Image 1: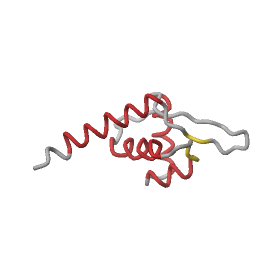
Image 2: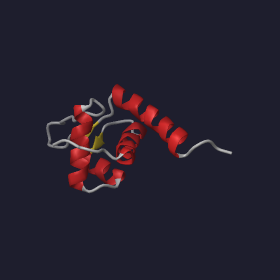
Image 3: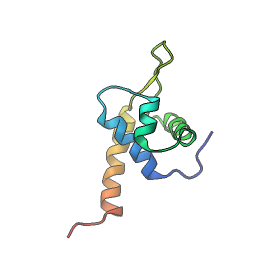
Image 4: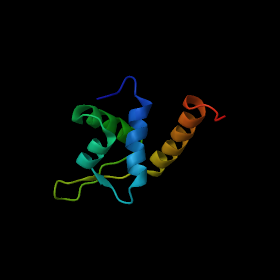
Amino acid sequence: MTIDRSDLYVVARILERLWKEERPMLRTRLQLASRVNHDVFTRYLDWMQGKGLAEMRDDGAGRGGVPLTGTGSEAYRVLVRWINDVIAGPRT
């Protein structure tokens, strides 16, 4: 499934949670931490995998973790900087 218009705040929340973790997060934990429902989360995670921002790992027991890729880490850094510069604006 594709995402026609992605919500940058949803992408940023998912990337942020992955960026803060030292190890891959379980999908359910990541979904809850991202504050989106399961269907929306699944679409975003699939989209992010397709863009090379995150990947799914299977531990063999049906509990796969989601790590942030190097591309995802860079995307998070750029996105946060853009949000701070453009959306938040200059601090006075």
